[in-house]
Amino acid sequence: MNKHLTIRSENGSANCIVSASNLNDHVFEVTRDYVNISGFTVENATKRAGIYFHTVEHCNISYNNVTNNDGGIRLYYSSNNTLINNIASNNYHDGIYLKSSSNNTLINNTASNNYYDDICSSICGIYLYDSSNNNHLYRNNFINNTNHNAYDYDTITNQWNTSTVGNYYSDYTGSDNKSDGIGDTLHQIPGGSSIDYFPLMHPWGKSPLKGDLDDDSQITSKDAAIVLQIAVGNCPCNPQILAIADVSGDGRVSSLDALMILQMAT
Image (tube, rainbow, N blue to C red; front, side):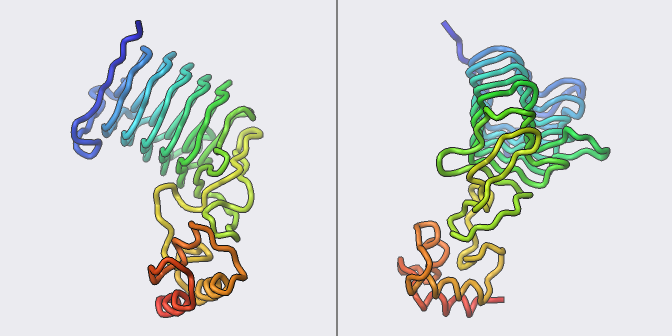
């Protein structure tokens, strides 16, 4: 019989901080299956990882803020685990690192601003390395990390999207002519041949700016012109576009929305 262990804070990561007592130790080190860690700020393991899993399966890491460690979340030789709604930021090396770890699912995580003062090619928001295969990643945000936001070491078996949505990369330069929040061109993941076919134009969980139809983070007369084209039927309008274009809040796109956008324009 498999025994389950859950380590969970009562008041969320902002109110429950677990700091390394020894800089040479991981804050959380897990070497058994069926362990859940949820709801902590995990910090100051400046020579090790905040959360470290080794040779485990069926574990869950969720709703943690992992910061100011040598590495944020590291999985070594670990498979069939789930990482969901974690933040791995301002760590000295990778935010999330998988080595020889397969069949894991990563959803709604943010890896941002992971860095090191010296140049190190392995510093990434997320790094999949050494036969880390058949992992599934979607609705994650990879933002402003040194060298690479995401790196997949020479494999094509990892899935970086579902059938409709992928991940957000702050270095993605594609356009969104359909204004549906999904980039028009695929995103090649550095390191091998992996591809995100549905890269996000905005960080997952962040609402687009109301009235910003051309997705340039500002309201201009160009947005009003796009709304007029939608209003007369020359441009498509799906639910995502409607949510951005319906500035008046009457449930449709009309010349009134264009007028209101012109009044808001910078």
